[in-house]
Length: 257
Image (cartoon, rainbow, N blue to C red):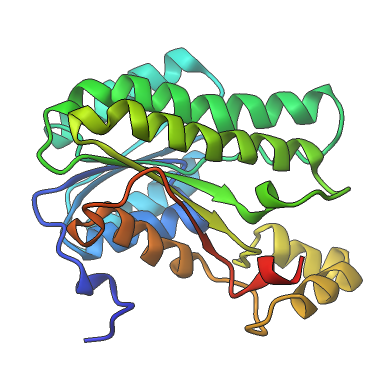
């Protein structure tokens, strides 16, 4: 069996919630957990992608739940978490994967990043906490970005809120350790998938696309499953004594600055 196959992990009897799970990285995470035997709930705003991903999860034989949710809305998050927990019978693992893609250095860009990349993770964690405390193998995994680790003129708001998310990961891990709830993050490099940011840049900004590719030592853009495999590891018993860490998954991209 390949060590990178989701089947390398056993998540039978786990209840997984993926906030931001209908496409790209979130979809890959949700499907990887489903293939590993977990019951999975996802949320996002777009109904079409939600329905398609829920169908794909169910096709693995897993219990599948999906609900539309604006992750910039605290009340909506509260309602979604309650609905997901009721459907799955609890929550063992919470994945906070949503991004507002706040790249512009204006109020709208900063608000999008703050409300979705950071506060959605804070709020979903808060509402999931009672269920996580009842789980024998509880963990939270946030999806961050290597943009958090270095300055850049593109997307200062995005980088700043991801840096805040990394810091929150450490503080949250310390606060929840007495409850044996592990908290980690995955900082992704540049990930390419159909209709995603870098897929669009390939045609809209080919010079930028090529310049970023040239900075990735492994010679390719990342794939959603690269992040999913790392998330499954951090949520698994194999990472049972790992908490408060941010794991870079980037093909060496951060090494080149």
